[in-house]
Image 1 (cartoon, rainbow, N blue to C red):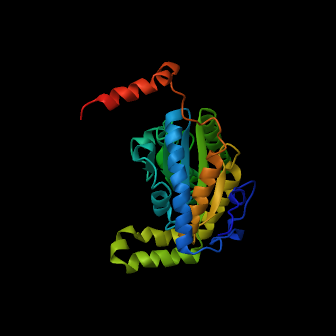
Image 2: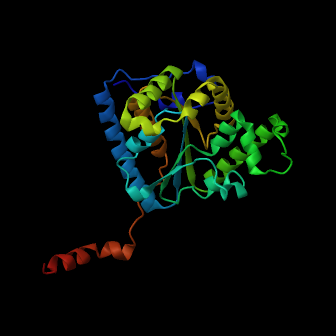
Image 3: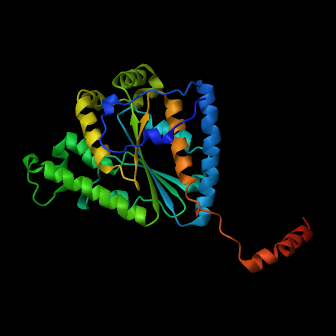
Length: 294
């Protein structure tokens, strides 16, 4: 298959999502793509073991996309070879009453990865500048000072929120969290086909919500909000990547490739050296175990 240029997917300035590719196959068959992913995720699983032993970094994996973009299946396939204790998936839904009694970043902050582990955010803190920007009435439930009606939510409000998110990510990055942010870029036609599949297959019916059709009607509004959010918050320490998502196997390979290539640059992430006294007595310990009677 063709070589993947991982850098080409990174957001580096203002973007126009409608101009970006939604399909990729690298000239490879589905079987070849699955084999490539299997090879990469094995290496990622080995890296996670080393990350845990090293114990100084955590990895935050953020995933956004339109409905039916393939978020759940991508998480399942990319992290399949991880130690189950080494990766925690958080799926953020409508804020609970407890969460609404805190600032909007609180529930995300407490879900950040422990050192040595991966945290996956399936939908993320960016919902607070995406779905809430499309539906600003949702902001009213946050009970914020100075926000009494939708008319109080102006451009200055959103600029401050982008800055707050940038500050949040800068802070956690400076304290040992490696951040990746992926937007699964799905075409409107592919979404239509996937929603139809949910309706046609009984075992997929549970995934369908009438709300998906309602949100689909304002596709262009969401696209504009994504453009602004990605353009304003893609930073060197917390980059956004736009992933063509119409071909699920290829999307998974791209994401896994970006992860592996970027993580390999952290040369300081190594398994710790054994204590000199323990190292000097390894042969003694081995002989002691070998002498035991079964």
